[in-house]
Figure 1 (cartoon, one colour):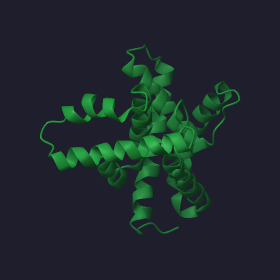
Figure 2 (cartoon, one colour):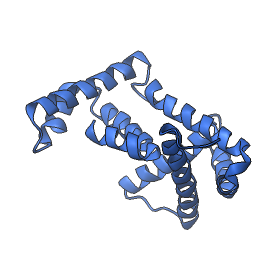
Figure 3 (cartoon, helix red, strand yellow):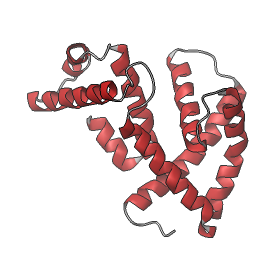
Length: 181
């Protein structure tokens, strides 16, 4: 909860990847708030009882959303889908603006990787922005499992990360009404 709120303000891309990880953690604990309390929340040292209570309520609200939105086994809650929608909207506005040629160039450097990833996705095709997040999240899961990652995948992830970092920086500017489109 604390990490999420900081990430949301500072880097929307990191926030979204973090929230996807939280969804998977909740699934791993069987959407059981008591297990999450004992195995995650209670292990945070230095948190007051009030902070632990707030953290539990945050997890419980996410669990409730996952249940109501049929995301118990897979998929993402609307809260996280809305971030993708907002980023996709910003992406389209940036692409349409002649002021952001560097962003357009970065996107076109990333596009071959997006096309390749989408080709491997089969029926589960997503838009360009979500495809980029899916790739980085998949890589993160591979690393957590200590699986070998090919140099090609590393190169793709590096370019996708660079592109999403640029989009996230523009998102922060747009959020603060500092972006002129």
